[in-house]
Length: 107
Image (cartoon, rainbow, N blue to C red):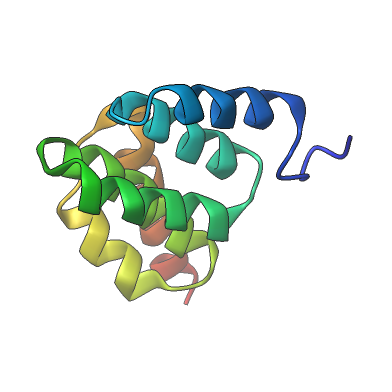
């Protein structure tokens, strides 16, 4: 299977876990994080948006992933907006903010 394939084994397993337990926010977060790691920006952002709308108590965690995914789609202002509301989970917020700073210095 190609690493970018939405049904790669690790992603397939994460999706199966969600199918069994749809109420655990961390399963959605882990899936969105897998998509992000594989460069599947649209999948990562869609899963993050679903997480934001379904798990209000964990909105800040999903904002970090959403901010990073839209940054990689070239939506820098949108990324700044979401990262401004994000938590610092797994280093995503700081890493993507650093990328934004590097982009602005390159201009």
